Image (cartoon, rainbow, N blue to C red; front, side, top):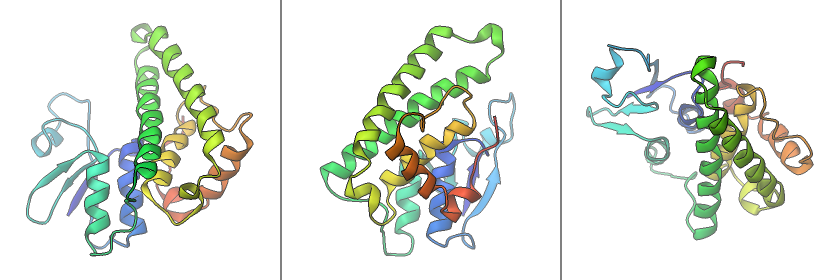
Length: 198
């Protein structure tokens, strides 16, 4: 199988972590995709140009990180990362909301200065502040303390964007979240997939 990624994508990081956590490195080749470039050869592989993108052994292509992670989780016949129940789905959606907003913020800061929208940046900064405040209250959830799951992976990959967004400081004044992220950051799969610096 071939997993197309960009090094700084938090969504691709999720899939890369699952590959490592499930011991799939021998089955999944990780390839760098050239995105946001006119006439990129990657568009012949995935016309949308998004990452991650998984080309399965039978040639079928899968797009969207949650779908790819679920597929990879089930390859060994022992899925363990996708949790059942409304609370797990609720927290994963909340983590995804943080990740989505941070991704918009990051993309805006990567534009040329004259093309950036201060309004969009301010909106996403405030959304991130509100959501990280909520996560500070949720740090004692059994879903965050138990075995590795997609709630944890999604949240950690979102918070990991602190390495790329200069004004995003999720650990400030959030001691429980800071302690959780520090502990999670010690996971080899998280360290091995760290995004490029700011």
